[in-house]
Length: 357
Ligand SMILES: *Cc1c(COP(=O)(O)O)cnc(C)c1O
Image 1 (spheres, rainbow, N blue to C red):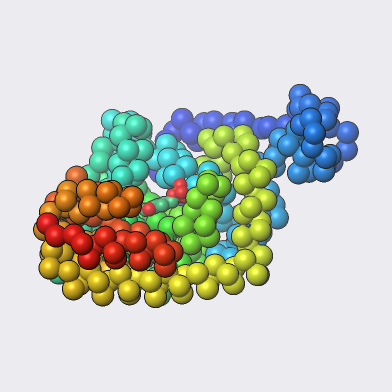
Image 2: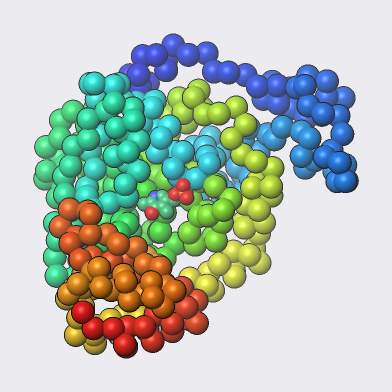
């Protein structure tokens, strides 16, 4: 499959910017990058971690740790400033303004359409089909998109929590081969019983998987995400990523997140959130002014209230911030509730017990 042929010609013609650190590494007397020779005043000199030095563009140790965690080869992986940056890089590399199409399945994460529009790509919507208990991807309609450069899927999806079957995603990627990429955003997959599609990237070259440390790994403030793709796609994305995208403290926090003890604690917390989610669901299902509840597979619940505005206001009055989703297609009066700590959830339950629309 000629993945390069899918990229914008301007990107193919680029000679990637070669930063000082990328050219020469960080060994020896470093007089090549116009850095300060001293650490910031008051801080100890700690070689590589010293903040006077530019960081490695793609720190090899972190890359190795993330590749192991996701079951892929390091060459299949690009570390980015959150998945947000991965989404933006994909759109900028593959979509020609005024010409290419990006397909999304709303209700979904707003950034796919935003990145596409900033790039001047056309956004084509193939809405999810709403069911009483779940939401479903309209696979036949996706297969019918003959000029999609990028198709964004998300499983579990934000805000519906719904998942999709690996076989359906693979079938779409096969059908789109030679025409476009299928991007699977797995920001919440740690919370789901489903397997990540990351290992399938090796057999289906136009499949791209996005992972992030922002959710289950508790590092949203770190801005660290990963694009998992064929090495040809990774090379194309590297051409346009910022020279030093990954701040040294963020890399250290991410390395820590990949240690066995921390991974075990992350797993334990996933279990706590699953129990807490059940507790919230029981109360929500018993509430007379909740009209629909979509439990989903992630760390949040989507509800349709009798009066979404009233629910938002009641929560706000109790100091609780929920996410109004009513602006999304077919989501009037819908509110997304993130599962919090047991104490936070209890505050919400207390509030709900008092609330009626
Ligand atoms: C939270 C979220 C992300 C994560 O974005 P980061 O930039 O990695 O923080 C990605 N996709 C979806 C659908 C999300 O909800």
